[in-house]
Image (cartoon, rainbow, N blue to C red; front, side, top):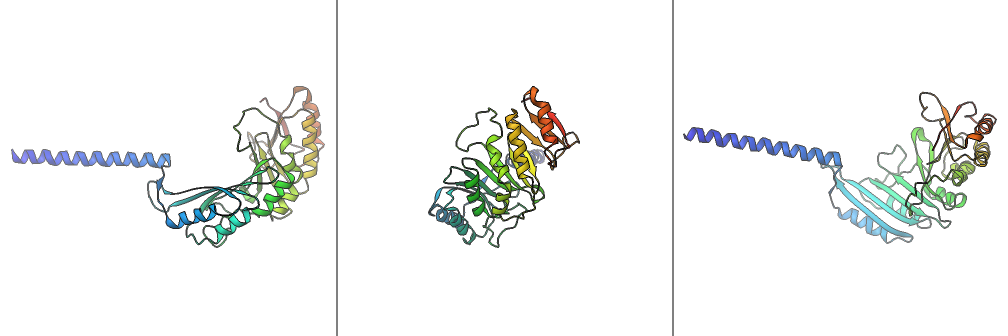
Length: 295
């Protein structure tokens, strides 16, 4: 009898242990899938946040330091700072001389005098040059000069400059960060300053003058090759006058259906004139197939 009871107890313990392990594995898998954050506070990180918050021009600082399942190691340090363009140099200097020992994922929102909003993002995984200090954001371009140039040539725009695939400097024109998306297409006319001044922006960024520049918005996507900014501006201005509200060119991007083409949203009666304008533009996209789509 005692032996039977002992076996039952041992079996119950084994079943409970198996159930606990299975529950733990499921919980760990759920944490991994949901990217659940487990706070890992750091005095040094808190001190850095307090220092940044006290800098001239800094409006707000949000910060978090956490670990994730399944390793619960190598904490991630995340910092989101809203700052004026005048305060940006001081912010970057403080970030690069802080002495904080870990890498930081940076999201910096810069407000400019001409009401431009410039979003600067830097992640430790970005394949761009970084300074020797782990906490120093590496954007791959001169963030201070480029922000000032965007304020000059693209007032009122919300823009995110980034280094994208193959080291291309790209400008993403975003919706106003303070306003909800109305869901109504507005066309690409407001984004044309980025096309017109692509060469000046490239210079301000400290990049080589013979590089390609990419411009993107919900209604516009194109690659500007060296010397093409004037011709591209002329073409897009003509297309606006012809009623085009969206323009996506794949001259340097991923082909659609295996074929490089230009896609356009425009009134039916203007299709022939638009095709003629593209064909005579002299741009690298001049010979691509043109597809008109509804939106």
